[in-house]
Structures are given as C-alpha cells and as structure tokens.
Image: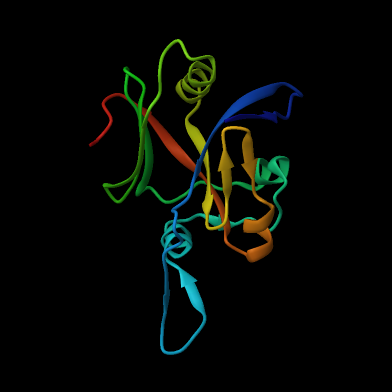
Length: 154
C-alpha cells in the first residue's frame, strides 16, 4: 500500500508501505513465562517500535528509522526483498503494468525509506489491512527501513 505524509511545507509525499506478518504466529516461552512472539522480538531488536494504535496517520508520523541491518531492495524488474542482517525475510515480484504495483514501485523509487508495518495478528486481505487486533494485543510494530534500488538479494 501507499500512504501519504504531509511535509512541514504542507505538501504531501507518498510513503511506500510493506505490511508483513507470519502465519501461523511463531512464539516461544522462556522459563515458564508468557508466550513471546519471535517475529516481534526480532523486529524490536533491530530498531522497530511498538505501535500502540492502529491509526495509519499516527504510525507514519511516529515511525523511526530501523537499524542499519534492515533493508528493502527493489530491483529494476520489480523484485522486492526485505532483509535483516543479510537474511531474507520477505520477497515479492511486483508487476509493471499493474496499477497498484506501479504506484508502490514509483513511491519506493522516489523515497529513501519504506514504512514496514509488521507483527502478529495483522489481518491482510486484498481489500485492505486491519491493524486493530494487533494493536490491541501489543504485537504491532513499525519502522522506517532504508530502500535501495538495484539488484535484490535472493
């Protein structure tokens, strides 16, 4: 998806967004403690922050840059990869000529960061993205990840 953010001068700029989750949820428990989300733990360790509200405007405004180990790469052919520490977490082939894909690719190529919204309990459908349950469960995280154009890593 592509959101917009108003700049200090009142102009809007497109913000490419990658919504990413794991299904089923991968969790672990240490020494009889509460279940802990593996995905959320990894992302928090790499500079993502918890998002306490499902409000897209607030998430865009509050997003901070993640650690240098996080990156999104978009190849000239539209291959999108999201990696942390050189480990591939997500990949998708976007199609030139598809209006939604073209909108995302244009926004990503014109930006130095993409907003990654992730965690557990995200409801991602062709009709949209519902973050309410993830925010209520405390498993919603977001971060501004540097975008690199060029060859995507496999």
